[in-house]
Length: 89
Length: 203
Length: 73
Image (tube, rainbow over all chains, first blue to last red; front, side, top):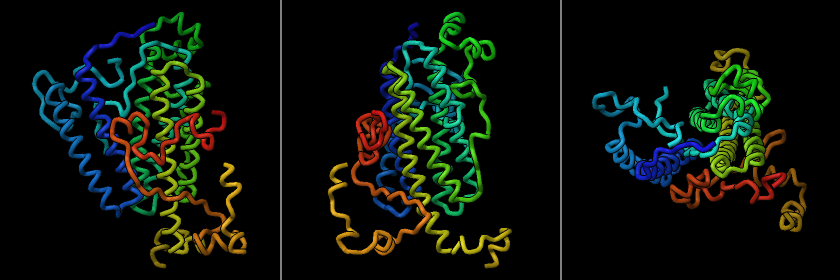
């Protein structure tokens, strides 16, 4: 049984880049939790946070909010829009 | 507190339904070594950890496990979405369908509903961290079993990701254990474990 | 694994019992488990790290490729 995908390759590609940047931050955060004095790693992590922020802003500008807590919404309420992450996209 | 980021930690795009795989993969949703057990265990244990490093790592890995729970749930959902009842029944999900239709319900592959009996929060930081190390190994082993059962690359891909995360978490818990062990040996903890917390402060 | 079997044992080289060697060189105690600390070297680029499940090459243990790590690869 084949599932249908909403084809939006551009959105997909940008989201995957953001996923990768956020994932790198998560990995560095966990490392820093047990290595709190490593200055170089903190600098590296802060750099990656900046890159992730830039990608996030770019994504949200075009495709709507990724969080309900931060950022402004148009009308109708953008947060509820498809696709939701567990759906085939 | 928690905020929700409207994206998965790792993409899940399963093109072909497979109820039989869903029946097995659901064990990492609500089973004994699954992500719900992991997140509940770590987020509960963090309250009684003695050092900032341990508190942070339990907090952060517990949070990441919630993200993994979401990935596993998404996999089960995509593997069964749109599959008619008679096909679910043929693939072994008849009993599940009777009670849960196409929903995602926290249970093990054998059909046991999730229980807190799957976790421990002992309060003794050494015991708790050893439990966490064991939990990560059990999760890794389970993902390897699931990878052995699967043959669809769309399914194997996120399973490999989740398996590798367990390896990294094990390393972090190991480091947290080292830090806690050193901190406690400085306090000569094992010589006399105080009966009450205020007694410990008097020392 | 053969490399480790044939490598001379440091405690044997120094002619002291393994336990004494551990206690002096690493300050290891009995009835205590030790996981070595990771020290960061280089990182995978973000997309590769995401695909592999870690940004750290030294923690990259893919299933089936590392006989030390998997029982029935």
